[in-house]
Image (cartoon, rainbow, N blue to C red; front, side, top):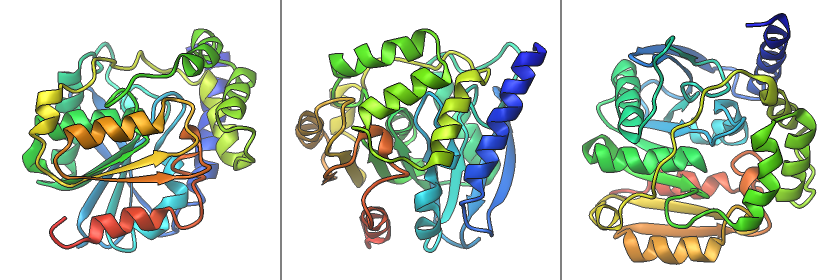
Length: 290
């Protein structure tokens, strides 16, 4: 890696640690070896609490993004927030080996759960992380008690053309300025946490691998997913039409509970949702029998 690249990575990790400082002081970390590299996991909550594994979105999102939810969720659960392998964060991909298919992602997450000693867990994700969570629940339904999907992308509807058009410059050549401009557009100019925003900008210079992409989960498999699902939608999302996502999820998932959070955008979840939004998660996760 060039000296410039090293400086970029160091700046990113400093920004990452600044957001992680907003987590509960009791936070621990775990490093889980897998065939695809070492996965970094931030952990907090009672050691004997039911497990909750959370996956961040794509792009510059990391486990740090759960800082606004971590204290409330870890009051009732043992929270495991994962940095995706090959993406910005503190996970380290193996040289020449990283997930390239949906099956690879499933094998990676299986290995992470095994390494954490979790035979089963509540599983959640935001955006791209929700897409991974859905595929993993379909792959290993016996390991997932409940599923939390926060404004999931490419699970029930495609991206809106306007979203892709505005994201294109950032995707083609990510720079801090382009990241800031895109997030400003998608969030409608909402005042965002400056430390979180600095982390997203710093991710533009972090070395990362091509993310796994693929089709939406098959409709017939979703119809057979017999476990409780919380679909938490951003009412002002510009990534897709929330009403279309809600309608298709309702038609496909046999046990879905849908909540639309008004006046919050796709990228403002999960860290900048309306006050009390974490209560929707804890109510769902602590509901007896799902």
